[in-house]
Image (tube, rainbow, N blue to C red; front, side, top):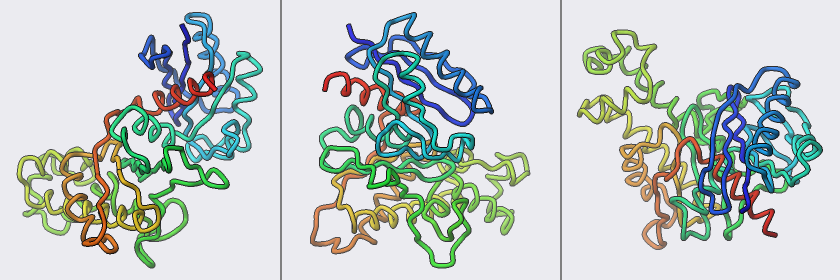
Amino acid sequence: MVNIFALDIGGTKIACGIYDENLDLVREWKVPTGKSLSDIEGAVLKACRRAREEAGIAAIGISAAGNIKPDRRTIAFSTNIPCWIEYPLADIIEAECKVPVIVENDANAAGWAEFAHGSGQGSSNMVMVTLGTGMGGALVLNKELYRGSFGMAGEVGHLPMVSSGLPCGCGLFGCAEKYASGTALETLAKQAVRRDPEAGSKLLELCEGDPEKITGSLVFAAAEAGDELSLSIFRETGSWLGKTLAAISAVLDPDTYVLGGSAATPLLLAEARSAYPKFLQASSFRPHAEIRLAKFSGDAGMIGAADLALRKVRE
């Protein structure tokens, strides 16, 4: 029996899972990430030692929040974990555990999980778009993860959609994630409620009268209850999402899009599906990509990392 250890390392916690050769979860747990480089490294190595002692492991797959070099061993940098700069994570773990280690960007790992075992099964060219605080992406082209020449591919949230548009945390303006993400839903809702409190009465009721407490989940709840203002916000956000997917199709022509993340709701899916053909080049003369919701939720990164590590063992 082959066991694989997978870690999903984020800015605040490390999710750990031991998987068997069928990718069934044997055991899982979580630990704090820590702040300093030594704290993070110590937490990761401690988790690896625990997995090795409890189950024996043939390989380790890591889903990490950061830009990973093409060798899938070194973290070039990470916005969420600033102390990771040119950090040889795989080398450090291999020296300790004596098994192969693969490091993958968290969005890529989640995208691979969906392609291999989730809503992307059966596709040849798939784009996963994760919608949360921002907009992430993963590309599977010709049934292989595409990372680009420098490991930077898939940053669909930073497609420049609006000239001189809203400022983005990346330093650019008018990026797609400023108009189609969970944060975009919240921003539009807060602006609308302040502009017209009467129209926003349902949202104000849900947020106890404080617009700053409006979240994407509150907007979704109000929309599900038929609140017209919230529905209009979903229509606008969904339109931007459909436009973004159409822009991606103009370059990559995928057969499938998979939408994941906390803001990927059935309502937003419906709006994106409606808007997509309106912005698609030669829409009447070409097949349209399928747009689906993701199968997996918070464990997608671990599943993808485990599968990639298992494939490494079987090479």
